[in-house]
Each structure stands twice: as structure tokens, then as C-alpha cells.
Image (cartoon, rainbow, N blue to C red; front, side):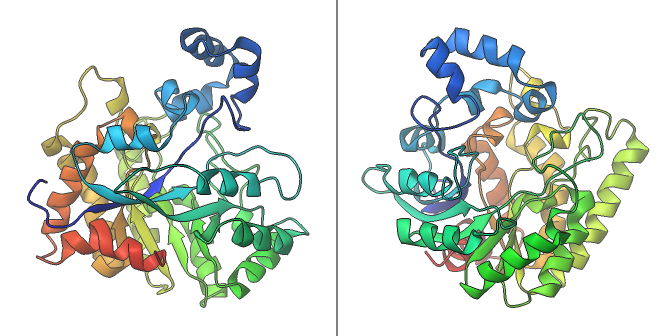
Length: 352
């Protein structure tokens, strides 16, 4: 990728530090101190299996992930802009999520790199959501929108990021979404693939709102067996076929764009994270390529962009290998596609 004449934008990363900020693992650091081996060992025993399996490599979620860590992971490639996406901040109170916005806004990214945008967290079902949205915007000029995850799966071995199914159809959520749309904020939607119709209905109800689909809708088990899902080749093809059809229907809504990201997360079932050696670029093209190509086919180059999902996808493959595969897939779409998919579209969509 040294031949690129532009710097990359990494439009979906998570930053955290459980030693100093309120996260699920933070109580362990207070009790145990910062002894990494002990900390990870206890966490493996305390946290439920579904979340351990989802993460794949627990250190990626348990250890701090800060701008210097992203810089090391991205080297030697040139990344000059990142977008932080909300990441499990657990400060209590109706305005608690604003603490994450302030914290991220104050991080030092060093010379040559900038925090281009923040996608904050908001519970749109909350009665005081308008005050929370206003507080996020006041806390940082980089706030471009919010994310509220709806990913839920009937397989209890698949970690649920929402308390119950149907969040994006909930009446209270829709009232909050109306307030978000009125402010002109974007919404990052994340669902598992069987929930894509919920995003389609949401986009149809609010055609004026910009919706960004995270991770192409995450077809759990489409790449291999995961928990009790995708156990046979026939089931995997059924999952992938339903995902292709539902994604195509969603792409008909012109207010929706998608991130070509997150496909290396363990939940797809590829099991890259269990290997001693990560997959090379040819295998990433073979395994991830069909999903990315379909996303590009139905959304078009102008409504897609690549992102790393760091540190989550690093469980499966290094940044440079993932982005080398992404570049090859982008080049299939013509000479202007690499810059659009690896930089310009993200800057435009997030108004950076």
C-alpha cells in the first residue's frame, strides 16, 4: 500500500482505558491493581462465555486502547484521521455517556493524526434524551451522531448487545430517534443480520435521517460454526442468502450507507483468531471478499467505506493485512474507488 498517494481514514475505532475510566472491567483493576496476567485470568473466569467468545482475544477488550496503540497497530500505513465510536462507557446518570465524549475529545493523537469525529452513545428510549443529545454536542464539536446497538440473537451463545429484540421498532426509541433526526445527527445502527429489516423500517420511517449501518449487518455464523449457529454448510448458506437479500432491500433506502468493517470479528465464525498465524491477504480476499463485494454491489461505491473496528478485528488479522485486502477489493471498482472507499466517503459522510 506504499504506492497510495493519500492517507487512510479509519472510520470506526474504539478507545478505552479500564484503569482510569468507567467500563465493565474497571472494578477488577481497582480490586486487583494493574497486574495484567492476574487481571486477564480473573476476567476469564468472571465474564460470561458469550462475551469471551465474542471478543476472541480478551486482552483486546481488557487492556487500554489509546491513540498510541492505534498508531502502532496501523504502522507502517499512513492514517491521518480516525472516528471514535462509542465503546461501553458505564458512568451512571442520565448524562453519564457525555463523560466518554469529553474523555475522547481530550485524547492526544500526536502530530500528523486527528480525531475527525465522535459517534457518541445515547439511549434513545430515555425520556430526557434531548438533554443528552444537547450535552454531547456541547461537550465536543466533533460529535457527528450517536450509536445505540440493537444486536440481539436467538442463539444464547451469541452475545446480545441489546436487552431484547426489536429495539429499533420500540415506540420510545422511535420518539427519541425523532429528536435525533431533528438535530441533524447521524445514527450508527448495529444489528445482527436477521435484524436488518428493522433498520430498513427505521430508514423508511425517517427518510431525512442519515443512517450508517455498522459492519454490513454482521451475518453471525455465515463463515463457520459459532456457538450453535452455522453448524452446517447448508445453514451457513441459508444465513448468507438471507443476509444478501435483506442487505439488498436495505440498500434501496438512499439515506443508508454502510461500513465495510467488522467481518473479521469471531462472531462470523471464520475462527481466524484461534490460529497461531493470522490469515494472509489471499485468504482474507477469499473469505471476506464475497461479503464485501455484495455490499459494494447493492450500495455502490459512493455509499460504502472501509474501517478497521480496532481493536476488535485485530483478534483475527493485523491492520495492514486487512487494509491490503480492502485495497485489492477497492481496486476492482475502478481507479477512483480506493480513495473513495479508504478516505473520501468517510470524510463526507461524517462531515469531517
